Length: 337
Ligand SMILES: C[S@@+](CC[C@H](N)C(=O)[O-])C[C@H]1O[C@@H](n2cnc3c(N)ncnc32)[C@H](O)[C@@H]1O
Image (tube, rainbow, N blue to C red; front, side, top):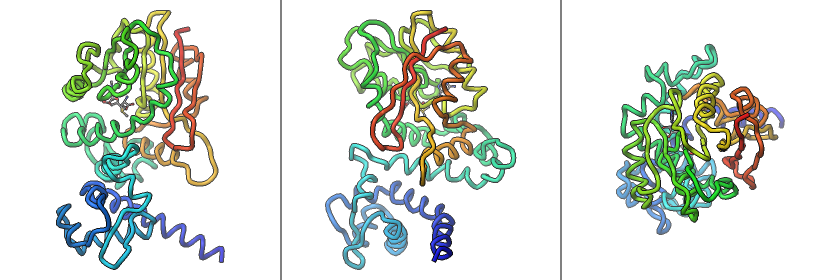
């Protein structure tokens, strides 16, 4: 009996890449949105999403065998609970992250062995340049990345628990399209923001800040945190950025933050913290992804505290998002020592 169970575990893992690609295909083709109005026959569905009916049915049946989607009658497909998360409009949609994982990140895995042997990102070997350089040069890849990051802004559960003060400037380093800043400034008219990210993301960031009606309160500044961080902030935030980088790079960013900050300024580091848990651990998967794609790493609270200490900060408070969501994030608040 034990042997049979063990074999099925291995079988499932061996087919992991196929399954991930099946998830990618349905996410990219927007199959879940096309099924939003109810069970649909495969010909109609395939026409709606621009797919070959026989092939699409096979992708869907593979996913059904893994618990996503249903086939209530032969040839008619429907959403089930997990498939609902692939709809683009639900609050906690996973559609865009499924697309992100299925494109360059997936292709990079072809050189996983290179990462295991050298400790270097597989992505750089496959694409000939680091990930952020790549997406800076490929607007479609950048848009996919931003859509996936934007989708994950349910995090501000923790942002909602933070004290940004009522007056002053919040500088968000690696702030993406500005969702965190928008939340920090919401209901606090005395605060203004600086959205600092790579220059190539500035146009999208500006457009989003305008869309949010915050162009008069948020200044978008393009630059690299490896070179410098804008001075003059009262609160500095850095959300889901440090896990993109190895310890040496992280110390460079934290050092630039420390130099930009006056003694009274505060730093809030938002990130998912690595923790051991029995069974399937999404944190370990995300950590492997960081290793292969960016050469980055997720860290335990102790590891992050250690880096902050080495960069000249003193951690004054740590808050964890509540709930069992594996993407639940934490915030470490620190001040210059
Ligand atoms: C994982 S995203 C996080 C975005 C946003 N802070 C959030 O929490 O959704 C990482 C961000 O860091 C930015 N980034 C990467 N390298 C950077 C650098 N050297 N300097 C400034 N920002 C950088 C990326 O452009 C991207 O917007």
